[in-house]
Image (cartoon, rainbow, N blue to C red; front, top):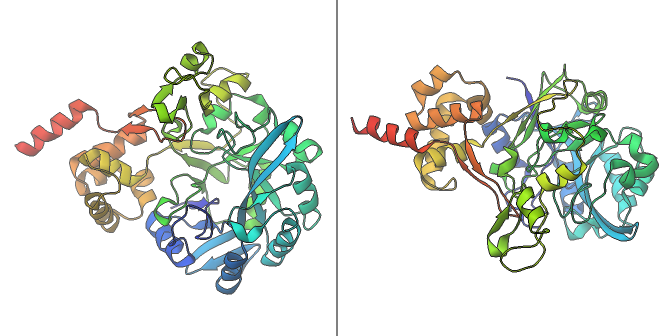
Length: 410
């Protein structure tokens, strides 16, 4: 099994997160999922930093370990400030090579916001200034713009973002060498904009509850430490960084344009025809990731950057089970079947990515095996997400469901 890393998660100290986002629960679910490395998230929060300091054991080269799972020190910050005539709201992930360096980062950032107020603190601090100040602490600190295309809080967001990396980071742009795609975009979409060619694209869950870790992740050839991660991302080393695991971007909650209150879901073309106005209430719609990307892209759909790590679109196992059985992904029926499959076949990532089709057919109910195979082949139907509402995915087509019903009957 390759080395799988989810580098952007949150703790129980972030708003709207589960009280179970603690080290014990994160490690439990990492083992269930087949994840080898997690970002700590939220090291700027004093209480979480204290837990990390007391419970993590050093494993060398910027790596920490807790109950068999490796951790690297990460935190997400919300940079909100006024620049070039507009309010800007950009989320960034900060990576630190050691706890003592993370502590120095916290000392500096505490001058720009209340770190104890949220695991993802709001900072009145320009992105370029943050990179400049924190880079003076240690050259191995690095920064990744988070979920780069979401409308409200990202470097390229339609509402408060920038039109290029250079506009955001100015003379500090050369220190930025990686960008997070987010749930509503994937590498294929990002490859369409030549300005992003030099950046290594990563994908992470941004999880707010333990069971959501790994819904997006990064797959490396073998075990890596912090310094190797830094080197791999800086060099865009596809020999060691094999691929990212991605949502189907249509499933992300900001893929298309729309107005959730009015249940108005619009493709970019439909939004342009209405001058970006909701056809129901007449107010401005939220411009989604696809529309925003179309405005900046300088390549046609289908362009492949063969110098970048690859990617695989995937759907979490609980969603595949739910759709295959015709019940909600959060239901007890799905939970029971999920753990039965984990016990019989191995980790979730083994089931989704590596288990041979014959093994799936032998050990899974027919509809679930067919669902996993359909997802692997991209043979799914998706109603795109919009304005904060996740897209809905159809994994088994109607004729497959009917065939399975007939099979089960006989």
